[in-house]
Amino acid sequence: MKKYFILLIMLIPATVQVFSQYNFAAKKIIYFNDLQNLNLNADDTNYLDALVQYLKANPKFLVNINGYTDNKGTHEENVKRSEEFTKQISLFIESKDITKERIFINPKGESNPLTTSALPEEKAKNNRVEIFVIHTNSDDIEKVKKNFKEE
Image (tube, rainbow, N blue to C red; front, top):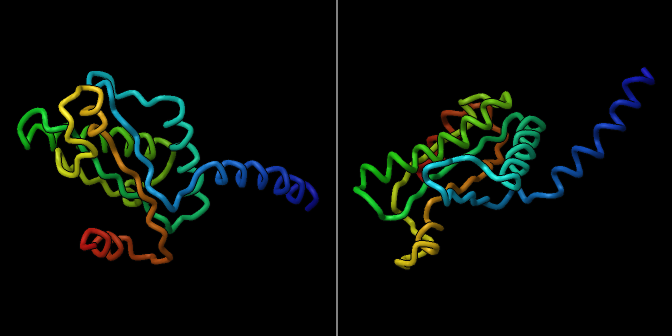
C-alpha cells in the first residue's frame, strides 16, 4: 500500500504542473508557416503533449480541431489543405492513445481569416488550426458532436 501512496504523490505534482502551464478552456492556435513541411515546433509539441495528458486525465473530454488556410488557390484546394493541417494534429493526438472518436476535425479552408493583408508574412497567419477542448460529462460522444457542430 505504501508503494502506491508514494507513487501517487510523485505523479500528482508533475501532472498539476503540466496542466497549469496551459489554459485548456481557451482555444489554442497552431500556425503552419511552411506549407511544404507540416512539422510542429517544440512549443506546439509541448502543448499537444500536455493536451493529451489532460484528455487522459479527463476521459469524457473531447477535442475539436478547426483548420484554416489563406485564400491562395481554389476553395476545394484550400479545404483540402486545411484538412491536412487538422489531420496532422489529429494523428499526433491519436499516436498518444487518444481514440479517434474523441477528436473532431473541421477543415474550413479560407473561411474566417485572421488577416486580409496581402503581405506574405501576414497572410501566412491564416494557415492554422484552432484547437478547443470540449468539456463534457456525457458518455454519448455522437450527441455531443452533433450539438457542438450546431453551435
